[in-house]
Length: 444
Image 1: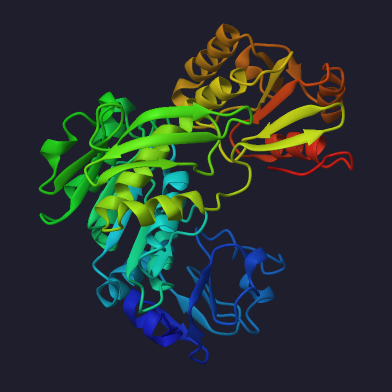
Image 2: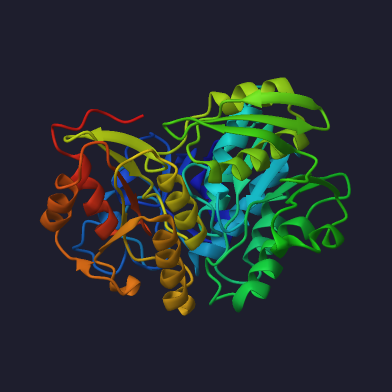
């Protein structure tokens, strides 16, 4: 939708300076400015405004791009607020009544973005759909997703993350989902939420926010969501091994792609989703259930999911020199996703299987246990770990990119390498070192 900066300032209780300009898109990184003519730069947590000589400040963009900030503006059109995050939440509340009631919200510890992408693709077969781009799923960025939705949107698909108790409740109050999908719960952010009980309490805030005519989509295979059905006034649709939406057969090909037969209350179907690894079957079921709960027919949901495009660095397979298969799954690195990726690596027919693992940052209070669990799984599967700048595994550490390349080049032909870890400079360097060479022959 198109808003003037003066209207945004009024909605968020801010002070407007400079000429009123139209806004349709919201940017949180100065490097993305210039991709749309009607952008608002949201400068959060002071970090872009402290040093007027730094190119990250609005001084570099104020000539033709409005910005929202917490401190003294530096020219151009500005919206000055006391705090950016509450201001963005106020913006979300301001625009939400103008949009459709059909809203599918997704939360969880693992698989949120994958499930969101699949649901959005399924919904787009039936409705004009607006979905969270990338991982704009925080109290800071999610309101901008709502504010950038076209007024003729027929279905919203919104991803909701959390670092603290109450985060999901606050975002659900703003987004007002009619369908709530809970993906697998796990270790991420346990310290800030006071352990697994805190995770379960926080993620359950989504189902508590659903209306009586809504639907909660819950797993039958995750003990951490037990009791969620009692926390919601909405209807409940389950997915999983004994769920309303369940897989009756999962066939895994040599390239880890899947063909999945499913049974649902709307009938049976067979899918060939754009996912690799049997560990993603549960995400497929969650997405299918979410789409069906949102009013998409089974036939159209299957068609949309099969045509979905997923982000890079999610089980992308590459063939590099020496006939080595490299699996780039470096988008993130929660413990649960690492275990699933290790299982997928072990399923490949290869003379040697090596996992290049970076440090895992989620669940920092349990850092030793998380890395020990990942190491134990790799050992049980017969997978060698190359701990890339990650002493937390208590294995010899590979510190340099050239060491990593030398070890991979020494592998016999037909071997397989997994790259996995919390997204940071270290894991990005591992990806670049192994996949940037001219001998690489593309991704699948």
